[in-house]
Length: 518
Ligand code: GLN
Image (cartoon, rainbow, N blue to C red; front, side):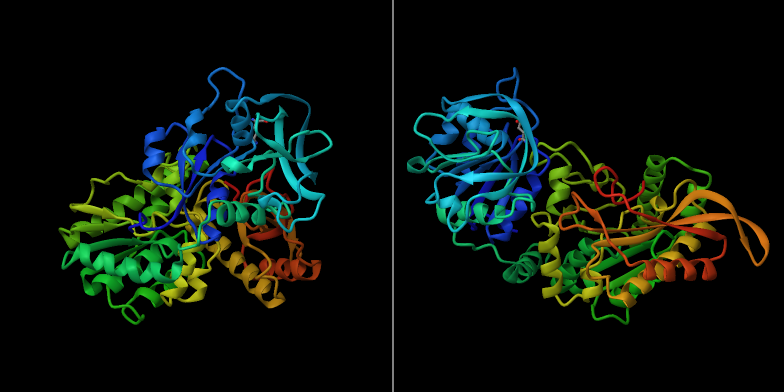
């Protein structure tokens, strides 16, 4: 996608945990935004001609040796800069203020008193306002030329600005939802201070991407691996609209999908569906079960599933012969988490971002969604007319039920967890809480215990139910499912699923737990 014609705001990443969120919030203002490491040379930054720059939080202390830093010239580009947390501390230190260890660290929701109601960032926001703090150091003295615009009980400089130079520093995190008016503050920066008009809209993304793909691919042959997930589905539809029958989609059913999921994918992309493409479904369940037999360790399971996936795909690709282009449903967070943008460690090594897998004979890789966040991909999907149940699907891990079955995976266990999960889903929908919960599923614990059924002693498995409410999946709370619903689910699972004699409901939040189990 040619993003160069759009206004852009750059997020300079100092390694903080909420950095993708900052970029997403900017995108929510309809402004294109990319994340770059703090190591990016100043010349490169200038060359991108940004409308604004946001410096993120980070784990270092600005005064420590080898701390992540930036050139003082960053603040003299004539481009508005907003520093958040570490970014704010760095701005102050670089420009002659003072940062030191705070006598008392602040963590969590904190009341912030606004000292300058007329600050462009705080326009229309009443004081005091609740903000999310997470810092050990603090700005003890703002840099010369800066005016203190907010403080807290423990923090003399919670915000400061040099409005003449368009430099703004905020000690708290406006990007997290716990900061009540955080989005408004970011919006004020992006729209009012940077003067962006908001020209990044998903409305024309689909149309211009299809036109671009058409032009690029011409009559070339394209191969797409389809998982049925949101990203690869949207990528496939874009390509099918661009090249029609020159696209072949290979869908590998690894036997670790939710109940009826394979059929749902086939309904949409198969010969009876609305799209004109070549669809190949590979029922590879047995291959995966054989490879997984007896394997207990989650990371090993992931690896095996990932590798076998490639092998199956490779076998199919060989049957198709030469292709010109290989499509991947890479999205922007994959790019960032693969260590290409920003500072985050390599989290998802299986994404192959930027690299070319060598198992298929092809010319080039196409990643039509690599600039988009998930919510943007969903908007594109809806615009393309992909069924809502597919586009709005809950996150589902690549290794599928393989990591929702603790311990070794067998066909029998997969069936148990599929059936229990289907029951849970049905009852959540019946009770009308499916919309409130962000992600829910049944998993199979590796715990067996004694029970009694029909006067007979049993020694069977326990199913764990998990349901969380979250907006960004970075933190999550348990869904408060009414007991009556939980009891119905429990009763049905015990009655309808063989070899289950207990049902647990996991009430742990994230953190400390994660949303998935393995
Ligand atoms: N490491 C810095 C501190 O402890 C900044 C923290 C942050 O950016 N969240 O104050």
